[in-house]
Length: 299
Image 1 (spheres, one colour):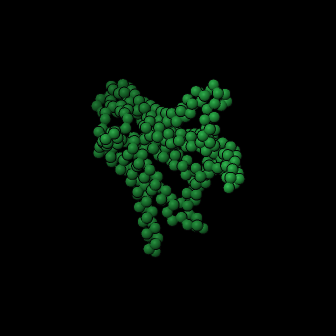
Image 2 (tube, helix red, strand yellow):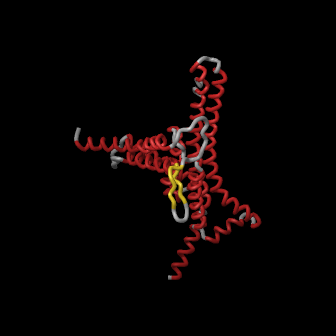
Image 3 (cartoon, rainbow, N blue to C red):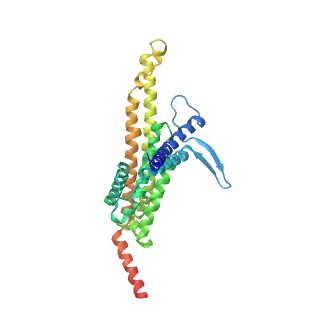
């Protein structure tokens, strides 16, 4: 084996190890720093420490740490997929990376139009970060998407994008949208505008958190029912949680896996629909043509 091939494989192994390392580090942090609990434990994100500033106190929680771990995991996974990509050389890894890119671009163009084709990296990042953040529960880690602060931050970012693309057609046109279809609906239109990020944040947060709560309650209930049914047996046999075998795992497939992927897709779809729906492309083109004519005649 030539030296370049050895170094290439070594780099591949290193990138794969770095991809798994953040999750392993998160598990280690939980084991070492977060105290174990008994029975049903439904709580918010654990606060590791607090940064005290003159104007405020900023808590550093599981949500923030785990979010950064997911970001690092995605970074190293992307570096692995793009490692060694060359024009004219087709490998399975390159084909997989191209398939992901093509599917994301096709999804964005289909739902937002050609004008927003450049949005595909942003939408892909939203879906991947959301899905992996929710799937952390499969590793026993606190999913950042079950923290309202995280989903609210994403929703505020989407709201800023919505407002920006509405403003591209002019501030007066933006204000005029609140009076449509009739002026007396202006208060309802203002409420609807504010409700957009609120509904996005609570929908994602609520679905992930509810799945965690339901899974914990069902597992605890089955444990108690097992003790009732088998309590008459002597010794360890009476304490064996027989009814917990199977059903919690099936619930986990739905709440931790299917629901996580579904909510990531829904959040990305709502982002595309809200941003694209806020932008009147025809009006924007007319406004630009009018500006160009004014500049030409003025010159």
